[in-house]
Image 1 (cartoon, helix red, strand yellow):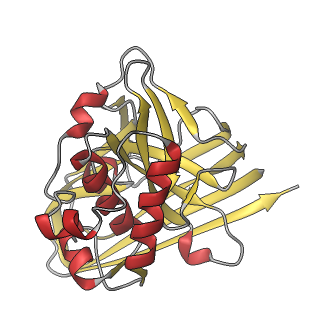
Image 2: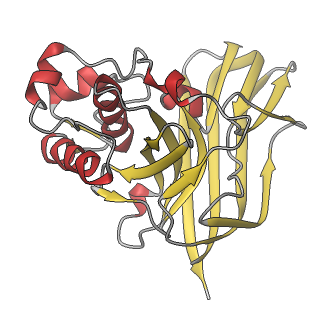
Length: 265
């Protein structure tokens, strides 16, 4: 598919922000299944670009003049294909590092007991998909009830969440099963479900020695395909977040985000 994507994030504050640092992972990589035709990010001031530990393109900008609103916009065109398998390059983080739990993914004994019959015994697509189906069946998709700081344990307790929560539960259970797994942030094209445009899923390591990963979309209980556009990978949401930052001042914050994905001929 040939897709045009526009992602706008706007912040408004009660009082002036005196100082802030923003870190963006809003540039999709050229990788298996996606070709980047053009892409640009507009920020209030010029950002500096680097490659982070996971190989993501990271843009950082610092604002030292007071402001009460800020707009960040990313847009471009991507060609996608049905691909669900990805290979690490020579500089990639070791899969063994991605066996470590984080505060967002750590499962409880109750979670492990509940999913005991679905936990994969080996890192095969069939077994990991079975776990994805079990998570999807339990955790009802319910926007607005959780946020970026919601843990896998909290989502499990509420039995609801969104793609990010599905991913965190999946990460925790894969890692507890001794299967390296990483968080993937990105976009999902579905004309009938525009609220899913911002999306998250999981890569699990299907061959540790060769650094081969397979992508599983827990929310749809399927392997990824041409509808999925990858942005960044990490240990959990926090290390792969499209936009995150710290600030001094500003008081209350109002955030609005909009994403449009259009299929081109």
